Length: 298
Image (cartoon, rainbow, N blue to C red; front, top):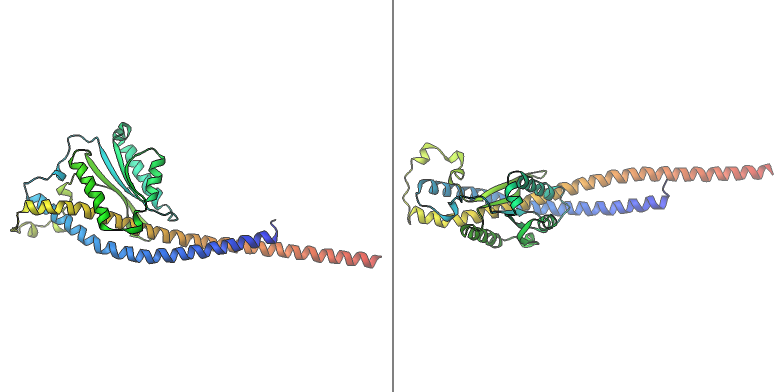
């Protein structure tokens, strides 16, 4: 059995760790509220732009470079959104494993041919895929230290330019979609080429709205060409915000579990400490009684 000093030191260490996990939980909760506010405001905006783009593309015969489907499906680009910091449970690993699962199953031919490229956002995504010899064309560690729309839009604009230049045949975004503090959906969505049929929401596709004949100024084609880049930038911005909120929720949940585990461990150590202390007291009393008995016999 460990001595009393060792047990006391372990209890002190666990108590200090518990205070840290409590503080991290509170910080994550504060950041989560801000992240939730951002994503709640962004979701309707992104959904409406997607709906408008879908309607314009569906009713317009004009074509755009971002909607052209390549005859080949060889060169693929995946934008993987992780986090910059750890201590958030399985937030990163679950997403990265889902990406690898799809790469090895759905895109095994491209993976074996070495035609899959990655853009990693966050230190954890960069570290994970770098160690596994994936082709990372660009990485953004520390991205969430200063989360801005312009920096996100720049990533999507460059990916769009390379898609138009036929560098890539398809572009995907992999991220964690925020559902609740303890739940995230791992998603790998194709964003390029744009399929107009998948953009219009089901609740907006009714006869009354389809029957409306809009007059566009300028032309519907000009409006569509202007909205398509905005739609793409907004989709990546939304994915980044979803990932940020999911990260804070996962960290809050992980720190709460760590705090509860520390409580249980400290309770167990206190019981062990009391048992060791009682054993030491009993031993000392036995030695005193034995000594007194020996003296009385003499």
